[in-house]
Image 1 (cartoon, rainbow, N blue to C red):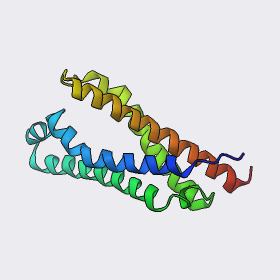
Image 2 (cartoon, helix red, strand yellow):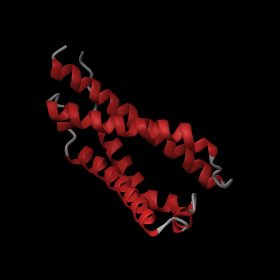
Image 3 (cartoon, rainbow, N blue to C red):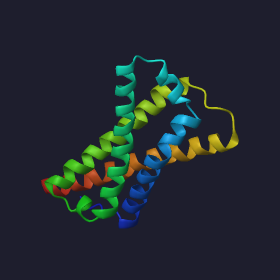
Image 4 (cartoon, one colour):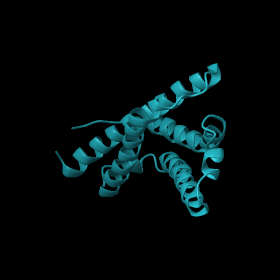
Length: 146
């Protein structure tokens, strides 16, 4: 199976992931009032939640940086390319499952800019899942020489 993902699509994914990392703290604060909710937790739980928040930002930024700096390596059908694209694909697919299974229960403030932002972020998350899943499949087939 020969599936060639153009570099520009991977670069789009990389820029988008860095964007999500940069905008994530604003969304937590402005849309979800996250910091006020976290203050209600015990101190240790506050630190755990903040740590996981930093992990999310760090992973999004790192995956974006990898896409920008290692575009060719992400599609060269090596074992590392299979593993890396599989990891990133599972990350974003998991994000989508969580997004659509749990987040609809919560109300986003009814402001036009936030509604546009919600649509834009969902578009990005779906794009990331598709891009990396296709890269994973292409790498896997090439690596296994199917």
